[in-house]
Image (tube, rainbow, N blue to C red; front, side):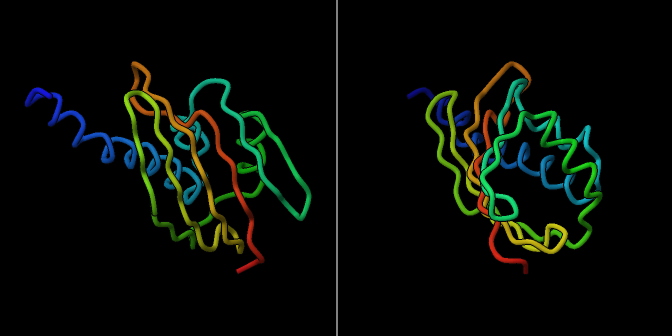
Length: 128
């Protein structure tokens, strides 16, 4: 590896965390444009909501978040980031997203505009 390759690879987790922070801040404030900016075009969101399996397009997910409004009490922590080249996985734990705890698993891709969420799979725990 060259010195520049080492520097670039060291910066990857921070760049991924910055993308996840846009997602978090968008959810916390209800800023759907900010939340959407963390996703790649055509992203999908799947999981279990209200005890039922769901698969949403990015637009459907954003509409659901907008309908619910801001989540000012949202607390989060990034618990894992793994990257290889232009592909990555990340896991986020979220507490009190409007009363619910979530575990989010993200598949991320590197594009010209930076790291973006390509898909999200979530588990909604019992209401917190």
